[in-house]
Image 1: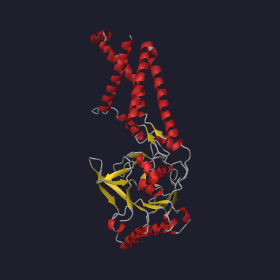
Image 2: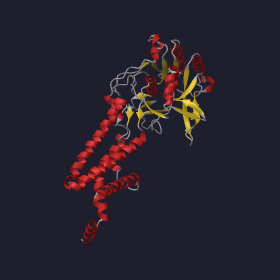
Image 3: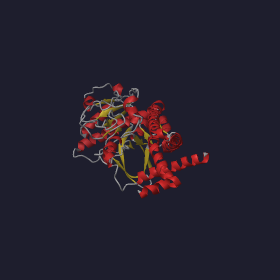
Image 4: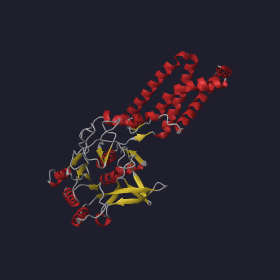
Length: 414
């Protein structure tokens, strides 16, 4: 009896795993298309979005970095911004924009080039393109070299899952460093932080992660797309030109020049804008909530605060799902054998409690320890085991018993 019970649970485990594999691989029949609208709402959501969007305590405002909105200024106007900010002695200036080609206004190009030449620590935009089969990139796009070949470059690419600008751009992670023709290129935020505190960046790089989750701190003024308080101070282009700021605000700080709309608070601006976990509508997001420059700022803050998000990884997720699946098979087999009339009610109740507990526990672990645990597979395993095991006993097991085959023959005669 003991051996038969455990053999049945092991066979049940294999049956459910094979069934799950077949369901995920069968694509000939689109019987689940009816659920596509629901799936489209939830596909861009992770459970940790709830923590970022609703549950975290208000973060401390960033004191080491200032954002400057260039708006729609021509290059000569941007040169004026750079000269004014540079005169206040920032530690490093980063340009989150690419100056591709020379303009017809040659004087504007020369003026901007001269402004860059005066900056002691300058980080210029680069973009990685054409990844090869080995994971390296063939091309590094930079600003027009004859005019803007100053400072160091750092790539501004984000991991957004978007194939083009019209797709939803959801930004949770960034690549720490990449290689272009064998040469290392650091991420924009990492290079900016390196000028501020090279020791912290060295420890950050020593984590050895190719990709890091961004531990978001907050946003600039955003018309309520996020419910966090303002965590980053931004100067608008006209405020800089009119000297409406105190120079000590800039001294020894990191400054990122970027596009934040035609002016701060411009909600119609969609260029270089992303959805983030801070979006107050964490399900079925509506308005993109953060400009790219602010995403870089959040990654910068995470490095400077050494406040990282760790992950237990796929191995843990698969292992947890497998263990919970088998434990539930054992429990539900006992219920099926001992109190079969109570099977549906008890298994459904148990599944709901376990799924809710797993989801809640993953949020608590993330809030308390900054550890990301993907419990999606575990929850799926818990939710399918009851019905799948019933199919296993009601169909599969009966096919291998005399009584079951006899009942099947009698049913055919009818």
